[in-house]
Length: 97
Image (cartoon, rainbow, N blue to C red):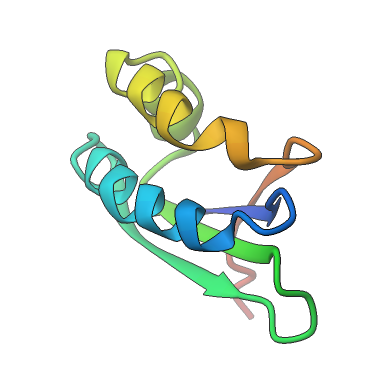
């Protein structure tokens, strides 16, 4: 399992519109092969900041599968205009002890 982490900075005053758009967009990502789960969290200290966590079976499911799909174009159209700056996305794996 790979955890995708993105910190989303939303243009000032557009958080409500972003949340409405995300409510639609989440159905897109949830339908993708290799998708496991996701959560969107709102920052307590900064009104226009969010944390997006998406769990994928593999890195390729996100990088090649989702980002290379027609559905990703819909995702971009719904959400990318809200970001300022564009988010840096990182991927993590669990450390087993």
